[in-house]
Image (cartoon, rainbow, N blue to C red; front, side):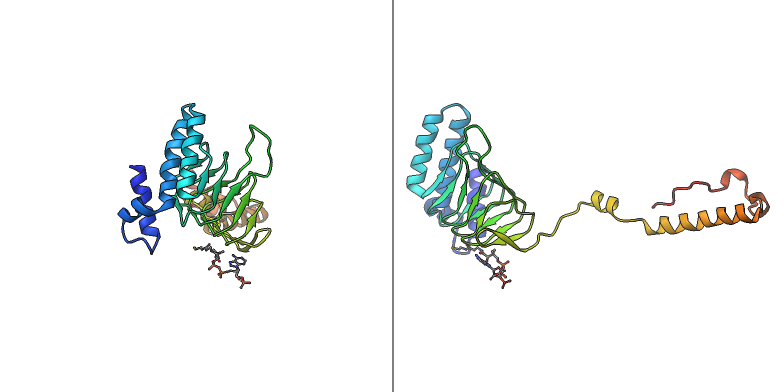
Length: 228
Ligand SMILES: CC(C)(COP(=O)(O)OP(=O)(O)OC[C@H]1O[C@@H](n2cnc3c(N)ncnc32)[C@H](O)[C@@H]1OP(=O)(O)O)[C@@H](O)C(=O)NCCC(=O)NCCS
C-alpha cells in the first residue's frame, strides 16, 4: 500500500523517527501526504470543490499547502512540513525530500498553462528554498537552503544562492548503450587502418593479391567490419 510505503520511507530517512508508527501518528509531512492523496483522487474524479476542502483541512492540520491537482510521487518526505507550498501544475517524483518553508511556485497567473516546476526523482530541496516557474529540477539534484531557483537544474547538480547557481555539476549518467555509441572502438580502427595500408601497398607495388595471399579468394577480407 502506497501510504504505508510513504510512512516507512520517512521512518528510514529521518534519524529522529523511532518507528513507522510514530510517523503515522505524529508526522505532519505524512499527514499532508494522506490529505493530498484523498484530495488528488477527488480532483481527478471531478469533485474539485470537495478536493479543495480536503486540501484545506490538510493544510490546517499539517501546515503544508498542496494544490489537489499537483502530482506527488511515492515515498516523498516533507520534513517538519510547516510552510511548504506546492502549486497546481507541479509534479514531484519519487523519493524526493522537501524541508520546511519550501515553495514550488508559479511565476505567471495565466490559466490553463504549465506554471510550476517538475521535480524529478531523488531531488532534495533545502529549507526555505523557492523553486519557481515551469522549470525542471532533474533527478538527484540538491537545492541549498534558502535558494531561489528559476532555471532548470541538471541531474545530480548542487544549486545554492539567489538566484540559484550550481556549485557542483551533476554527473551525467550514461546507460550502457549510450556508452557503446559514444566510445570509439580503438581496436577496430587500428585493424582497419592496417588493412587499408596493405591495400594501398598492393595497388602501389602492383603485386597482385593472389600472389601473396594463398588462401581461397572467398576468405580474403575486403571491407571487413572489425568492430567488436
Ligand atoms: C546545498 C547543500 C545540499 C550542499 O551540501 P554539500 O554537498 O555538503 O555541499 P557543501 O556544504 O560542501 O557546500 C558547497 C558550497 O556551497 C555553499 N553552500 C552550501 N549550502 C548553501 C546555501 N544554502 N546557501 C548558500 N551557499 C551554500 C558552501 O558554502 C560551499 O561553498 P564553497 O565551495 O565556496 O565553500 C546543503 O548545504 C543544504 O543546503 N542542504 C539543505 C539542508 C536543510 O535544508 N536542512 C534543513 C534541516 S531542518
